[in-house]
Structure formats: structure tokens, C-alpha cells
Image 1 (spheres, helix red, strand yellow):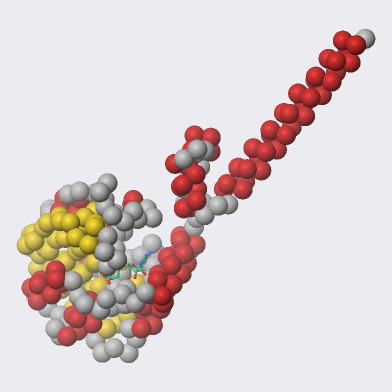
Image 2: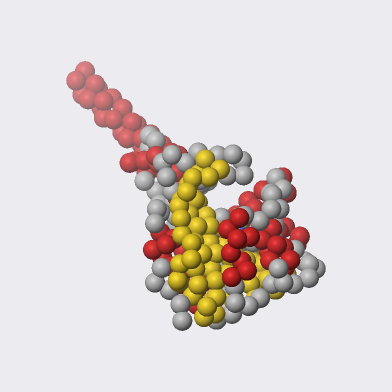
Length: 250
Ligand SMILES: C[S@@+](CC[C@H](N)C(=O)[O-])C[C@H]1O[C@@H](n2cnc3c(N)ncnc32)[C@H](O)[C@@H]1O
């Protein structure tokens, strides 16, 4: 009799433990899936990675992503005004363009668009930040437009000069070639992934791989300049950068 009571109690205890464990897992997984991507990334990397290994970002729609990018950059531009000085690559090479129609991809607050107008260019300045685009309205020869490059296609055969600095969206690479007129110039500079970089970006996909910029464009552009080098970010972090200048082959 004592044995039967003991056996029943043990079965009850095991059942209770099983129910608690199942609930705890279901609760923590649903909580986990609602966390921001940065937190999910951190958790995945540390203790719970193998347990959940949840896909990051797959559930976020393009619209949500664009809204997030817009808010992030509006906030940055509101709180930290960025330098207005153009980078040397632009001042050294912009005048190689055969005509005056230019495109500034992810123009930000427009330091390069403004510089290009001083050289006589007419510039299409495109960016997802409404704050940046608003700041560029009513400037002669700048046509500033709020666009999300996740949902935007560049016009073909349109530009004598295309510039892109510190922005990377690989889907744009073939469009950039098509958007250039024959003999048009591309000037591109942005950060490269390296373990010794001083500032870790939120996503590796925002960084070039070593050699990637040159390898991507060398078949369609006559390269005038191509290099990878160490430099400092605006906040003084050591970062690897790549830059190219090329002319669209006839
Ligand atoms: C590091 S800033 C570079 C700004 C400018 N090119 C410069 O060098 O001063 C990156 C820019 O990319 C823009 N951006 C980020 N995601 C974008 C997207 N999906 N579509 C369009 N612009 C985007 C941001 O609003 C921001 O202005």
C-alpha cells in the first residue's frame, strides 16, 4: 500500500515537472522572438544560440526595415551633426565626369551633393532620412528625394557621375553600372570588414569584404583608382576602408 502511494506521488511529481518545463520553454521562446534584433544576436552568440538559433530579421518586412532605418538616421542627424567637408576622393576625382548630371546615393545631409553643385553639377540626392532630405530642399541644382533603396530602382543611362560614400547595398551594384552613361564616372568609398576594426557595426552585411569593391566593378569600369587602407571614422575609431574610381567602359 505504501509502495502504491509512493509510486503515485512520484508519477505526479514527474508530470508537474514536465508541464513546468514545457510552459517555460514556450514562454521563453515567444518572449525571445519579440526581442529586438541586436538582443537576439547577442543571445544567439552567447548561451542560448544552439537552443533557439532563431533566424534574425527574417520576420521583418521591408517597410518595417525602412521605417527603422529612417528613424535611426533621423535621430543620428538630429543629435550629432556630421561634418560638412567632402572626402578627398570626391574632391580629387569628381571633375573627371564627362558631363554634369550626378547622383549621390545615400546622400545623408548632402555634404557631397552641395560640393558637386559648386562644381556646376545638377545632383539627384537620395536618402531614406526625411530629416536629411528636408534639409536639402530649395538648394539650387539639388533634387533631393526621400527613397528607400530596398524598393527603389535607379534610372538607366542617366548619370555622368555617381557617388556613394559610407553606404552599402549590394543589390544596387548592377543598377549603378546601368545608371551610368558610357564614359561616366563612379566614385565609391566605404568600410571593409576586418577583425581589427575599432568600431563593430551593427551588421556585417553593411561592410565590404576585402577586395570586393574592385572585384565587383572591374569588368565594367576602367579603374582609375582602387585601394584599401586604414583610416579613422568621424568618431576616431580605426577602420578599414575601400575606395574605387572608375569610368564606365564603352
Ligand atoms: C553613413 S551615412 C552616409 C551619408 C553620406 N553619404 C556621407 O558620406 O556623408 C549613411 C546614409 O545611408 C542612408 N540610408 C540607410 N539605409 C538606407 C536605405 N535603405 N535607403 C536609402 N538610404 C539609406 C542613411 O539615412 C544615411 O544618411
